[in-house]
Image (tube, rainbow, N blue to C red; front, side):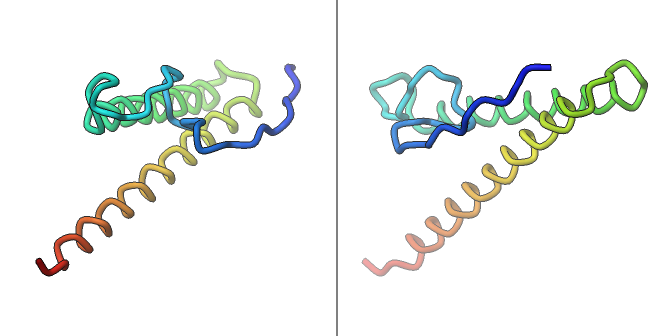
Length: 103
């Protein structure tokens, strides 16, 4: 069983935990802007959820024997979903704040 590595600090330049590793910053000149980055992250979130679901089903049917890896995959998907929900809530709050601004 592989060991767990040390915890690395997350800096502002690290696009963790949902980034594809391409190092995109989300600027329009870097390949599509915010909408493209958001779509990629939602696709990655969907893949994490499907992977966790598949591993959970494999564990339930007896095809998987490593409970720890299944639990880690499910927790990774859960944390990614929680992050997505928090980002969505912040975006909705920002939209409402802008909507309430007087010109």
